[in-house]
Image 1 (cartoon, rainbow, N blue to C red):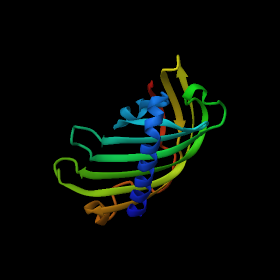
Image 2 (cartoon, helix red, strand yellow):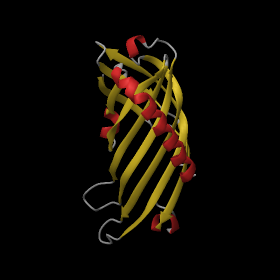
Image 3 (tube, rainbow, N blue to C red):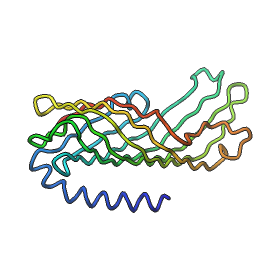
Length: 199
């Protein structure tokens, strides 16, 4: 599965290189960041550019750093660090792309690849910890609406249900009962409000 994903990603990258030169010259590029993602510990951005009259190609990535629990050490804490990559294709169904502006209602498929290191620390007086690695591979459908104000400032509201298949290794996979809550099956957690600028 990882090999298939990276092969797809390589093909997508070649397509991006094919379009990026003409896209930047025609000012059909939007760079943005998901505000809700930053709040939830996903720090990164997305670049989207036109690949046709009503088609956009988007490639996003984030550095992930989250902590669940409290800092008093009287309850368990769970730390996740890593990264994710999210390629997607958007088909704009309500508005034309006038002058290269990607705007209006859209729907399209996407992939989500995520690699995380996980550490779970027990509360005092124990303070021992277990760790492991989690690889998430998901595919889904993104639905949203993007506005472009003054042909420059972008606001993108989206909802992205997807089906996820996790792979877990390390102590967190062998501990009984399993203490790590894996994201398996259909997920509805990816909701975003991205803001950015068009070129």
